[in-house]
Image (cartoon, rainbow, N blue to C red; front, side, top):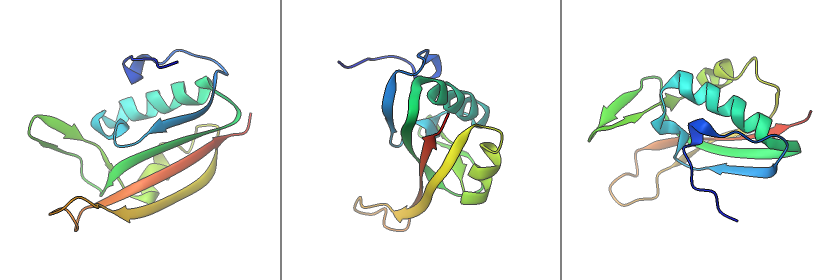
Length: 114
């Protein structure tokens, strides 16, 4: 089953074993990222996992009418410090699209323990 909805309106409890948010949460404002991650935590079953990716960097920006919220590892960990996720893995990767080889991504995998 596929659910098409605004991620900011996610309203499930203990429903999913995984959430895939590849290059999607980065288009929310920082405070919306935090609120959406709280909703994701609630929606995950115990031991559920969320994957998310963000542009790597300290400064958020707008380009072609879209906003981009960027994170470094430390900035992201500071954002989620009060959430009840078990830190699982955070790693950087390069962009594989032609002409964007210098762009970096921050990838996060978080696990819900309770």
